[in-house]
Image (cartoon, rainbow, N blue to C red):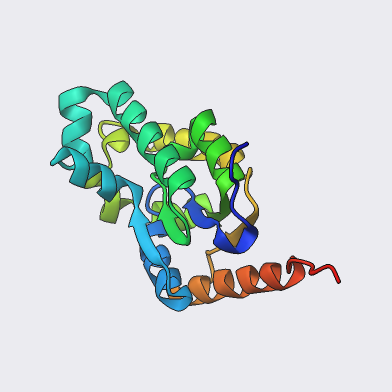
Length: 187
């Protein structure tokens, strides 16, 4: 029988579209909860000795998605008490989504299209899936992924908050959930 972690031992997986702030917020949450932080893309870069855009260019998107799937599932299943930041496209893979929902507490960071597109100039250069795409194509990708991100344990709308406020909101929601689901001791 497979050992699924208790609610308090589960990793916390942050999902959402690229550039929504998963890494920045994940680092803040990890400090507030005294947990290690793992950016899945950075873990892949370390393992393969090259940046994600280089992996895309050298091995292709299909091979990158396989690497991303294997790495994400491995971290979900075999790590405990971590904060994980998944790449924007990772959660679109069924196997990753299933592993996250089984072994982690999944938190979706939600940002409206209007707020997100204000960040585009800051992130476009290091996001291979955005290269050579029109604004309409990028918006289409953004909208298509929203339905996938809706499959979570809870969602935080980030438009009107800075990263510290988002991190505080996540910590509050987690602590409330942990209080509600305390293990019962039988007499």
